[in-house]
Image (cartoon, helix red, strand yellow):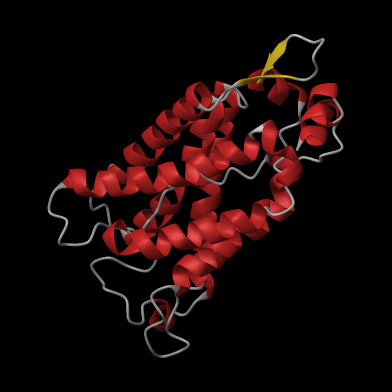
Length: 262
């Protein structure tokens, strides 16, 4: 779905002219948000090996399941892009596209002559996205889950519009892999694997060890870590504030005392 509908939004042959530069970022952002709404409560809708890597670091996904996610993400991306290419006439599919790059491919801008420039662009863009992922999965945000899909839509759109001219703002190895295979374009392809996945690991590690503060659910109970709270809250992408662990925190004497004092 991500590659089928996301890259479909970049096909300019039907319009007969170049599409607005920000259209791709907006389309990919809202396609991701729709997928989260559909599959978030089923599989957490990773869609991205970098997100899966972050999930492993946070302890939400086992290494075995991470491999399953990785294979599913890559196969799904290839199937989606392949289906789009299959149903689209070649003259429409290739209209206005640089033949050296191909539709929907992510390659560094020619002005970025050093690989480290592209690497840092992808690393930092992915880091911004992973910080959002970690905060959404944080049980302390369980009562703020209603707008999760919209948060991802706007964040991905903003990053894509800003960083897109540099590297294409992939932030997702699977998203880059599919067009690379079908278009046979492998320019600095390693950057789009190493940068996002290393960013997912490092950013999740930073979030876990810097923003993971201890909290007490009541004056008479021992201090409980965020890891303990997260373990009690189901990782479904959309977490209800009515979950017992969240109600326990919200209804605790300590929480009520703070509310009364404010």
